Length: 294
Image (cartoon, rainbow, N blue to C red; front, side):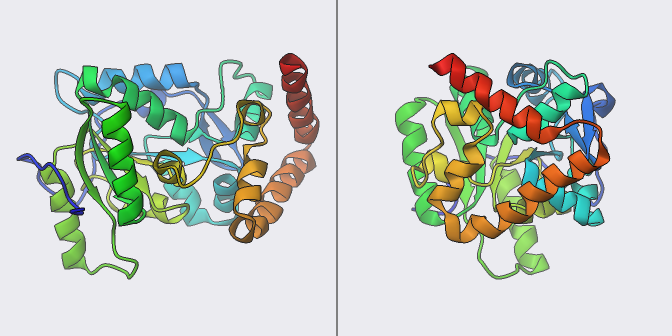
């Protein structure tokens, strides 16, 4: 499979700076360990994207990025000031992790719900034929991209795939990076899905803010879910904030140390601050979900 597919001409120009064309202050946020997490739900986010991705003035979100934030990225931001700046420097950081939305509700944001990267991908795929959104996929491997391409063509007839590219594993040179940017912009996408894994994908998006002429969204494992390389947790586990545990079972070697450190530190930091007993909240939400199912 070619790394790049279905190009069309674009008049996009590369800029060394970025000027946001929408008012970011209209997005409600809840500050959790220094990260301004968007206090939103999926319905709110889809309405927001519908409004700006294809406005009468064009894609007003082009050049910006969305972080898909969870406990791991939030604790990492708490420990790394530069990464925190990146999380807060995009258009928004959506609450992919259930504990984030649970904390948000306790802070008074009752409409805040878990808004996952894979969930957002699926919802946008559904409406893309009608709204003519063009999707670019950057990251992962050629085999995974091929599987995504086949899945999209089968399950979402008429969807426009602007292009796909799996970058080399070695650091790219300035010349190679400029070529990649031109390649993406030439395909004229509304949305650029970035699947490099955290924190690499957020750093890549921040470095390319104002250069890539599409809205960048860092979705990490989202590529593997839609390629069929990994299974998502059962719905009851997702609603009980236990999807992280399901992922741990599937990939213990890579995720055990990460979850041991970040999940425990998240609980400790929030409880230590005395603002609310996060452990109690999470257990209560899990219990309520299990009772509803049974």
